[in-house]
Amino acid sequence: MRSLITRPRALAVILTGTALAFSPLGGSASARLPVDQLQALNCVTPTSETGAAAKGGRGPDTREMSAAEMRAVEARTAQILKAKAARGIGVPQGALAAAAVPVYVHVMRDAAGNGDVTDSQIAQQLTVLNTTFGGGESSAAANTGFTFNLAGTFRYNNNNWHKDKQSATYRKQTRKGGANALNIWLVDFSYLGIATFPWDYSRNPGVDGIRVHFDSLPGGSIANYNLGETATHEAGHWFGLYHTFQGGCTATNDEVADTPAQSSSTNGCPEGRDSCSLPGLDPIHNYMDYSYDSCYNQFTADQSTRISNMWTAYRS
Image 1 (cartoon, rainbow, N blue to C red):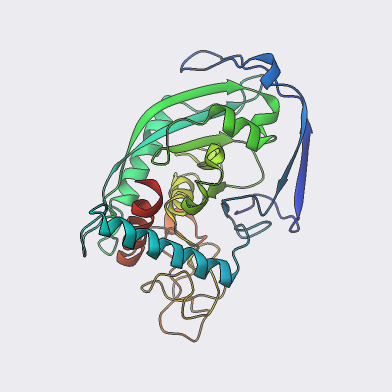
Image 2: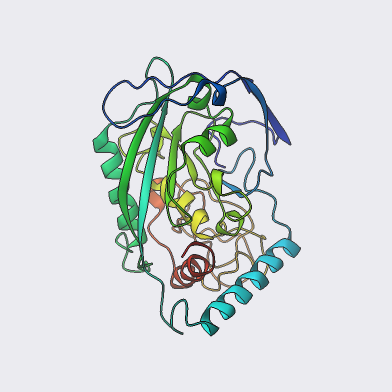
């Protein structure tokens, strides 16, 4: 989780409040939930929230994934892929999965309409996702084979949800589609984005998706982070990618062979940064680092393979 303000790591954030009834301010589809679903409740959202991963180097980062848990995920994924292959399901050896991902955008405004974005910004954000996952920003970038289609835009007015309070509640009440559907909630919080991992979908499908600061969309006001690349980074987690600095200076690192190991996240765009004695410069241009939006330009071939495998195992 890349923080917009410096704050110490917290073990949990206690979010208490009364959910407000939805009152759309026109434009796109919206909904009103029964009053009994909008009652006040105490919601505890720990940084280790199931499936949470976040873009940002200050404050809570990704949900804690121990080396043992990472190994377990890799073993489970291999077993699922093997079983699917035995049944003739999945992708042929050497090929990559490719799919059109339906995208549902949830604009979480407050009662006065703050936090709104235009339909044009949403369209531009979808263009960014299609460009970045299509390898369109660099000749060194891999084309993952995935495309993104806007399936619906929903606008809500709720002071708590706008600030990402009661997040588990509002996501379960508003999420659309199945495991293959990318839900994006646009909120106003101290971070740029938070995402869920695909292997956690079966345990808690109602919260699956990514939360993104509304001002990180193209045309937003957050300097250095307003080109729409936050959504690309968070979608990378949603597809099953770790940060490029996951595990630090280790051989396994982020479970991707062609992203050189790095000891820590990047800030800005420091060309030539080399934080590990292992081969290769830090992959500062990779979407799964924490560089400026303007510095990002690629997923690698092995990241594309991992995306394909995780999609086949958990989202197809």
